[in-house]
Image (cartoon, rainbow, N blue to C red; front, side, top):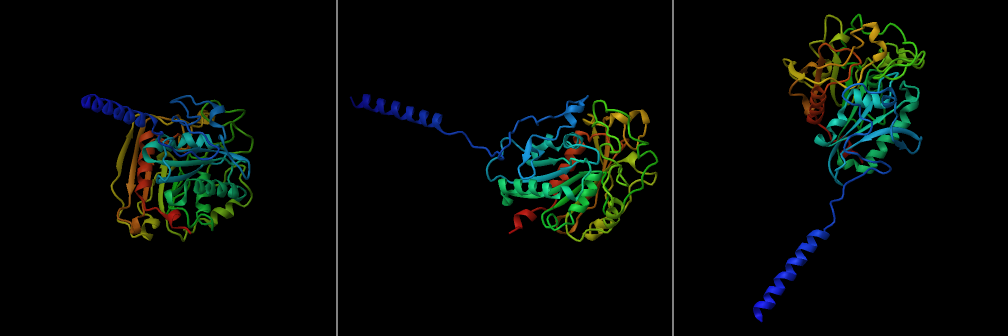
Length: 372
């Protein structure tokens, strides 16, 4: 009898353990309000022939105060309280948010490196201070939802006129105490700009609608990533604004500059950087080669017939050279990246994209966490 009771007790206990294991609630993941998260990023271009309707899409997340849309990419398995790096990524003049997402496809690394990436759109396709409140609202939303204490670092990324806009934003009262770093994708270099190559600027607006791979043409409006010198369709006073940005910012942040070798003149990249001197960095390193066997996703197909290598040709595999200024004060990162045999509009390849992400994550962060 005693053996039977013992056996019954073991069976019941085993059943309770099994039931408890089965009934245990699944781990809860964090989701931003009014968003959906898919393992494969929404409207991700295929490896080739990304369609025009896809690249001009302006996003599936509504900024509730302005009712303008944007893209928000983040890990679908993000846990409440998990620390992330937050990135605001701005397209160039004449472009769109989804072209920018696929031009610099850091969304491919959101899971591996725990990134939250907001990619907005300018309705005029040229950024101006009229867009600032919309950008503030996006940053406020992400910060409030995830908690500033969980943002390890906040970076601005901008291609061409989006880089010029990042240079302006980083000096404003709203951003100057929040931003830990700026990645300029052919959007101007702090510490001395290279000269422009003879084939950098396109010769004129393309007629009609653009074929696959580029945003559609619009009379008087620049193509994706228009020349920063004086993009067509830019608001009045652009030249004066650019002149004001030639003086370096007074706040502290890391800075990475990326460009295509064909965008520059024969002198190429300057060997020194005043921004590196600001942080007492060491002498520029010898280049580290990053080899990509896969091409980027997007390009400006509407101007291929102009054969302007400095502006950009078809995306292709290639090699990039990474130059760093080591041992910068306070954990700052200062670096230059040159993509060989590339112009202004070929989308970035996967390995060089990941290398840029790794450099961003290696820099000092924490400004958001220190805000009261």
